[in-house]
Image 1 (cartoon, rainbow, N blue to C red):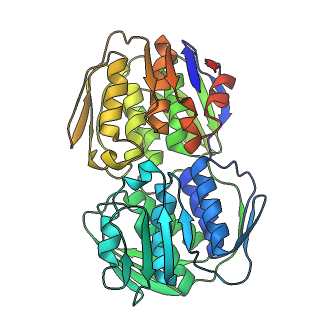
Image 2 (cartoon, rainbow, N blue to C red; image 1 turned 180 degrees about the horizontal axis):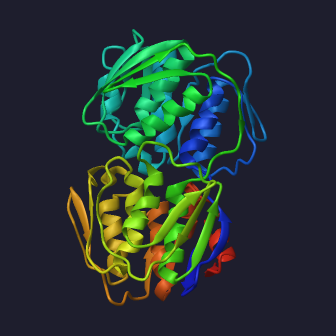
Length: 409
């Protein structure tokens, strides 16, 4: 699909895209207790999670997820492009025990499994260092020691796995990346009757008294940020509904404050995110190691500021859906933006006049979304525009409803 975008003013009121992180976690929660997700609109990645829980024995009736009988470890699981579902499921398989072949699409086959293979060494065998691989064996004790620098999603998976069997302990080898997602998982589990305590680099899980989850999937700040930045650069004003109240820890919701630092009006009140462009935007220096998905969101505003934007802590961007260090740089460059990047940082220079550009989505939803923001200023084309379905199938429809002049062919 080709998206042809003309200069547009983005403004109005819209519901936030559903959180992929919460959506996957709430679907996987059905392995512990019943889930009823009242407003579920599955993205490609959430659909992967739904198919996975079905294979474990969960009955899915519309938006109602309920385990029928005992959990069964499937002989084969396909994870498409969903790294979150993959990394949270491997610990569950290892704790339950069994033999499973796991696979994914080309992008997932390139992602490392180093940390989880090392953590389970001596208990669980992997036939290959990358997907596809056969997992066999069972964790010998309710304790795991795992490197925290590769992905927090394995740690979230062990929180689920140990909650399922009545307890366990996780020791994380520093540095710990994306800590916010560990807090997100622990707070969700605890809110539903779990017993998870985080003390330094150790997580203690005790037996919980779980209750069903009946409610909505919260909105996603990182995905909604592309609506917000589109309004900012186009001179509009937007209210994004159904976001969650900002918690005590940093995370994707930190984009609200980053846009303030960049000179925009940005605040949350009663689960609505209000955003309006300021008179003059300014560059910022920010480390995204704890919330790497915000790099494209920050980059979407950076060309329109009055000073350079420096995004640090980008090393793990190399192993996202694309090598985002390269694809952020390439997409911005096509719009006439000067970018310097290495394994540690991306430096984006402001530009007086960006130019109309065409890009091909590099199998990465957030790169297409980032480029859309720039295109609303000067026009542009995005080929393979359906890649946004990975996380937000309503992306184009929502932007059209907000005044976006977009032709899809």
